[in-house]
Image (tube, rainbow, N blue to C red; front, side, top):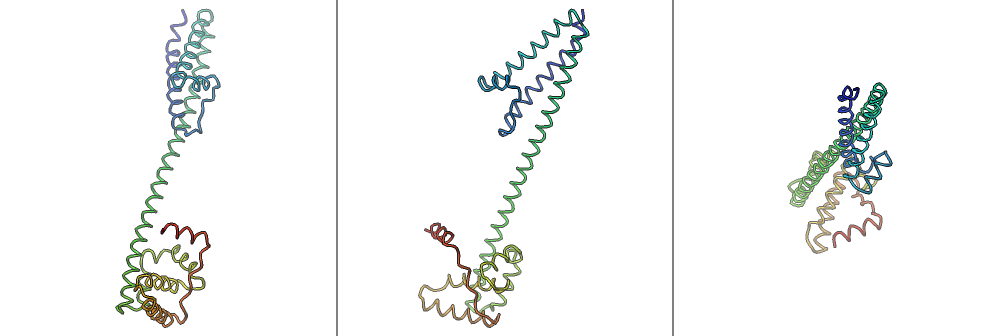
Length: 243
């Protein structure tokens, strides 16, 4: 009888279908909604009966094909073998395609994860630089008030810091103080934040402001540039966050 001659092919066909089922399960689970079961009958079984329904449908289809092959092979062995060859070829193509899609999804997920890690690292670095810059600016402001350092020296030290060397930071600072050079913007920013730390009385603050403005004019030959006025919705948001 010819059917035993097809035993290996039948086993291969069943194995390929099992691989297809496992790959389909992974793809539907990891595809994030981008992958779906293309067979409408199998998709209906999946929707109505879940994973067990899908597995039952695929097992039923495998048993149906194997039964047909056995039946055909009893009368026409070559035809039965040809049906098996075609079935195995198609299932091999399906499995290889699924492997390719799964590889693409996993590679995309890995890249997305690496991008998130890199972005998190970049943000952590920016936060670290910001904290160090604020500490440096605060210390230099104290030195400036105590006469331990000139405005020019303080600005040079700010410009040499990690944050001060960042072109994006310098550009943003110049945008905040229109018409100012990079060092003028650094000096204006230092003066602004230094004034926020001085005494509570207006007279005391005014005296320090006049001294710092005089130091700015002596250093750069011009008056301290005014900070760009923020749009109302940004100012409102900042006030709400401080409340």
